[in-house]
Length: 312
Ligand code: DGY
Image 1 (cartoon, helix red, strand yellow):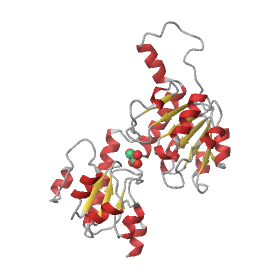
Image 2 (cartoon, rainbow, N blue to C red):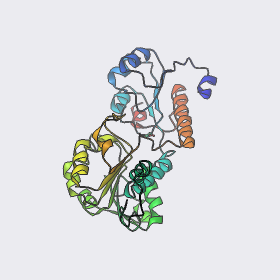
Image 3 (tube, rainbow, N blue to C red):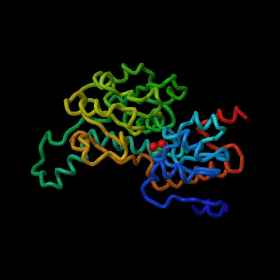
Image 4 (cartoon, helix red, strand yellow):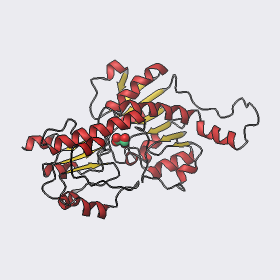
């Protein structure tokens, strides 16, 4: 905010903690030259049209841009800024944390302790699978998937991955490319790090879950829509898979009475993958860099639709 204020812009800042309702956003964007958005703002063709042809840039404070219709922006010559790279390490840290917290039942054990159910040292009490020595399947070996793989080097695991294309970085990470079904069938942990697109919508559906081991753990720090949540609920209830560690949901926020939150084999977090203080500050700075560049008619340092420049 300090940088934006000193840039002497005519700012319209949404003052509420909850996101602006879509009709309100549509009303307020009229005539703006730039938009700084969060993942909670839907930016689609009607919204861009409501803004008007003077709109020069959309800058999102996130790496994922699935809330933004990129094609509609490109068609209107509007570059979309995002924040790749700066959050990979924070999300990877959280992913490893979720793997261990889910496997080793941190929250279940903590809740039992608080409720007075720690009555003795039970030889098989609160036991779960090991991360060390396991097979971890990474779906999406992009920046975040690779940061997860780097951290896993210390756990003596076998790393499988699946991507649209085999990755040039895989050998250095000791990661082996396999078809998706092989990854699902052989992994003890399946961790999702792909973007949410029409191709990845419900990539983890009932069929995919049925291929996983009954001892397997699903970790999702990508986007809720990559998983068919009803199928996951069924798989967790029926013991088709062992547990899930989830930072993302459909919808967000997930209602507190959602049945997933009542399951002992679910560790759930409220979309906090990138929520380290330093990371969020870097994301904000990048979003401002992109916004100011776009307003000045310069190429965005981090553009999610670089094809927009080929149009010019
Ligand atoms: C992103 O950047 O896409 C995350 O989901 C929020 O950090």
